[in-house]
Length: 65
Image (cartoon, rainbow, N blue to C red):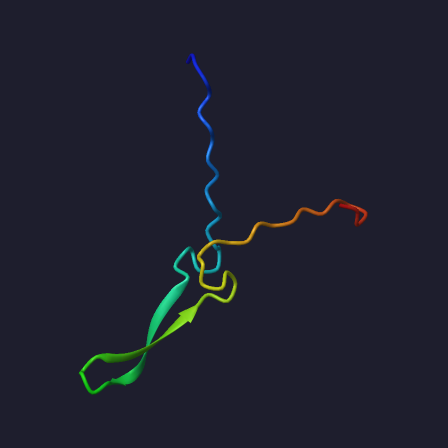
């Protein structure tokens, strides 16, 4: 291939705890006055609801960075 090399893009790491599905609607039972289910939203505690795992910091042996 000739010409400039295309830039590589890095994809964010998907959170291994929630597999990218960071929030879930959970029914708490019953319905409101309009007939809709009452729900709450629960976020993944590992990624705080973003679906992306934070980058890991590499540590060298001996405690020096």
